[in-house]
Image (cartoon, rainbow, N blue to C red; front, side, top):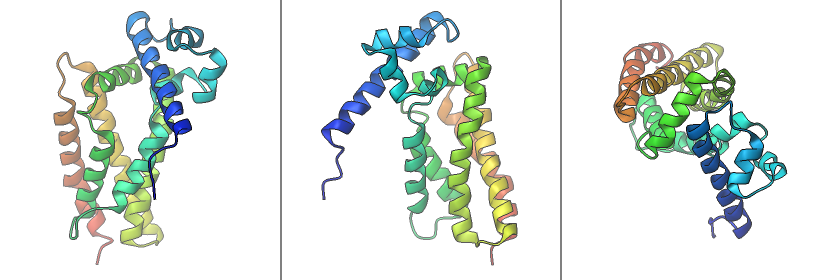
Length: 203
């Protein structure tokens, strides 16, 4: 079975990528607030109507890969070597999806927008719940469906992405950040405390 995307889907991905690239270029050159959807669309060679077919709001173009990232996270959480601890699986899966070293300039630009623009920060805080839900579901699948296990899984998931949010903010605030190191430190902190919490629900 051919799992490659269709020509139509590849065209959609290319157009979305061109819109995102134009948006980040304009944000960097003119500032987020001063950049309009019309300017982004013109720079990408599309109409404003086309922009809104891909991104409901200007804030959403900052997180253009969100839905695909959540889907990849769910797949990564379902995979892993035998004997891998729950927290190590979460760490591996999240790093596989987030890949802080994959496009560091884009990630730093996104971190600065989240830190500097209230509307972008509000959208980010809303969207991060989708990642948390994916982690909760994976943890509950292992720990059991009782309400105490779900409560602890919810706390751990919030702790994971709270720590990552701190790493993102730190990246945006530093002159010469190392996103991979900051993310690793965030996970070290979560694993240290979350392991004890989760052990209360494991046999």
